[in-house]
Amino acid sequence: MPIATIACPHCTHRMSGPPARCPRCRGDLGPLARLAAFADWHYNEALRLYRTREWVRAAESIGVTLALNPGDTEAKALRRKIRAKLNRRR
Ligand SMILES: [Zn+2]
Image (cartoon, rainbow, N blue to C red; front, top):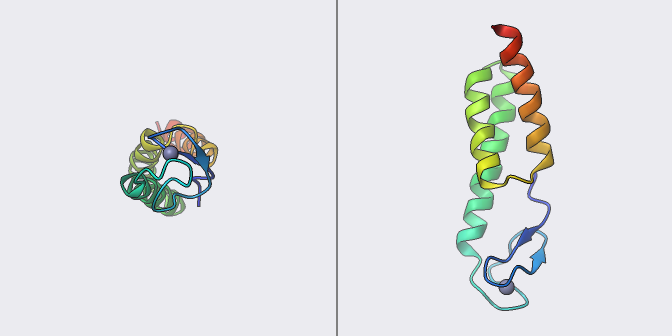
């Protein structure tokens, strides 16, 4: 869902969704694509856990997403909602 644009770690060229190689410098983006997929997986997992009211596990998953992709605004919005639920519980 998120990961709107990514920057090539070799030359900082920005592009949408990681292709296999950077179109500008031909740098290998395979590891970056796997990280993006991993961040996405955790985002979806956090969303699922939020909907099933598992706030602590949702917070863990969204934490992983944001560690990998700190600029993800959708993930930040979800983290705010999860934190609100966690605070209400105490
Ligand atoms: Zn590049």
